[in-house]
Length: 73
Image 1 (cartoon, rainbow, N blue to C red):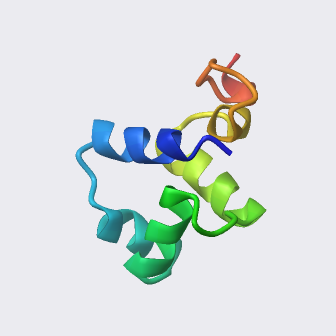
Image 2 (tube, rainbow, N blue to C red):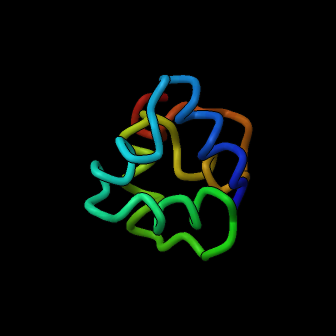
């Protein structure tokens, strides 16, 4: 997983870790560990973040540099 992409996407939208954590229904400390790479990010979180940021899961996972979600191509 490209952890810096999680942070970059959040910062690009001027969101705080707390705002994203609230969207995901978790404490900020848990989300912070995902974003820093201290904890493995579950698949459901990757999917929700991809929807939230309107990017592909492959982009979040570092498998492509194309942000476009599959259904939008």
